Image (cartoon, rainbow, N blue to C red):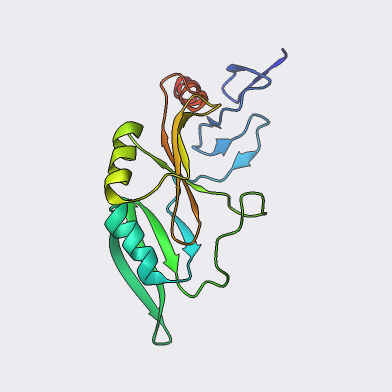
Length: 177
């Protein structure tokens, strides 16, 4: 397979999808195009029909903490829920319709939460009364996964990354670059 060299002269396979940092700390893709320098996903936003029902699910069943509420024009505009110290779920009220769009619809498909132990997560969900919509299974990528939905039908994947998964291999390649 033909290879290519990054700006530092390091050889890479043509199909490799690693992101290489140049000396100026700009991220560049394999063709040398500058990429957006983003450090993480800060939040995901969802629109919901019933805020109270949604907050009950995310705070009382999944354990996310409510961090703040913002009002606009005297009405609730959004609620911030903490997933991690620097990752949040924004919940907007007054959604139209009865359910989130189906999997095949154009738009964001699902949110994935990384969990350290999928079996423990499944037990915690069962204890909280949260049903799995898809049972624990080994994904095609080599990760354990199970699926739930929030009250509005937003799909949530729960994933325990496998040590030999495709993502783990890709992360290892990035660390070696």
